Image 1 (cartoon, helix red, strand yellow):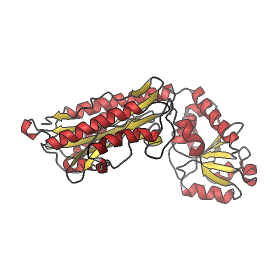
Image 2 (spheres, rainbow, N blue to C red):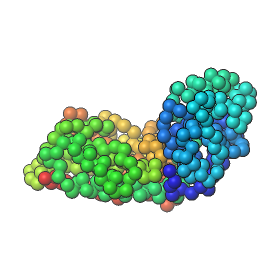
Image 3 (cartoon, rainbow, N blue to C red):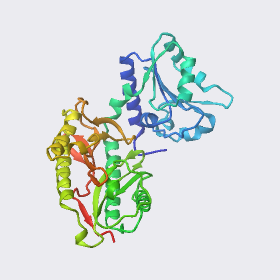
Image 4 (cartoon, helix red, strand yellow):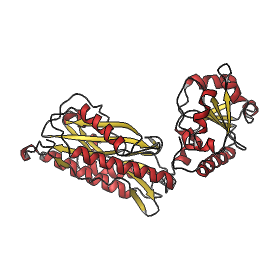
Length: 386
């Protein structure tokens, strides 16, 4: 598909990837269908049993190998249509792996034992055939080159992430302002998906609607449980605009219009601790700060508040073309945040069998400090839902 990211940006990405590959004496990068392919040339290819592969040598031009029946779709991609890469097609009776091996010195590099970097999500049906065809090569994941490059978002990527975040904000507001009591989680989740599309997403990828005791399950799959007054709902939703993701979590408390069904003192205390942890972790997400420090800030506040064992996941994950990508805000990740990193900040507290809460924003590490893309209020939303 043709998007808002210009062709010259894709040319620059390929050049930077090749420069790193050359420095590391890589034989070639072999990129199958997935977000690496999308990031490098703008081709959001259909996953098929037929091989599509971008062959990226450390120097010279890259070549996209596609089934002939996918030629038109490939040409519609920005990087291909602008002739940033060469396009080679294969017929139904051809061996596409052999065709890959004959591109741009791949076979010669393999015979020298040079590493082939394979896109991380390439299926085994293709990887095993490549390994049999190029047995002398060594193999590693393409993320060893591409992850650091992809983790630094350019202005166009940040604009798409911001647009997706604001669209998701509007969906949260619509759901919080609508009827909830008496509906099933699954029904509300379906509404979330419809509203994500209405608000401008190209794709609605998830809608976690976790009510009552289910709110203590971070990745709860919406069920036929009926939402009732006097309980929380953890609403975690997201979709994509031109491939770039939204991901927001807000916590609601549904009263059914009866103030006596409001949150109990424990929940109010729990949420106040969580809100402070999320705010201070966000403030800590500055350039040069180790990713694990952001996690430590949130975790220390929640632990001091008496809920350390109930914070059961990392504080955040990177986001871009993948919903979860580098950098990860987790203990042990000592890599410093850099300008252009985009990531979630989403601490949570979960009392199993009772209830839970989470607050999540997408944040960009900017020169001026953390740039929070989501603008929805962070307070516990006490709603009637009737």
